[in-house]
Length: 171
Image: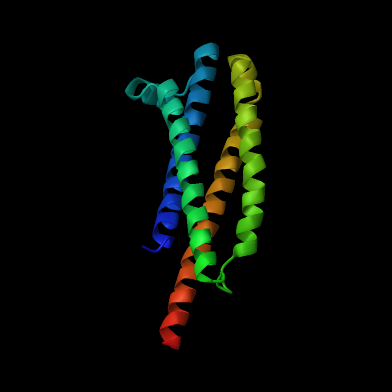
């Protein structure tokens, strides 16, 4: 079984779960500000009545963690299988951009998580004053992870297409 399909599927799942996690985290953040300052958003309050945001945020955080572990395993398996079969990266694949985006995405995501935990511990009034930087960091972390995943998908797909195309022409 080719390892490119599980790797691409895991990267797509990571993008979807990360976007949902970011939405849930921002909604919970806004809800906690609204509870303390009594000026909550109607959309956030409606979402909280449909699905309790505290539980939704917790579930999406764990789901993101499991998806991240699965994605890392699938991509490492794809890399190991590619090296074992001697497949080089495709010349058109954005390998260096993928590596750079991964190097940027890791600290930005860690910084966003630490900032989010720090501001939520200090209460709603502080969360309101730190909303700009906290929201921006959450969105930047999500964008960095999505860009890394999309570049990873391009690398996997182009490499597999390049090696399959090269095998077909030489046969």
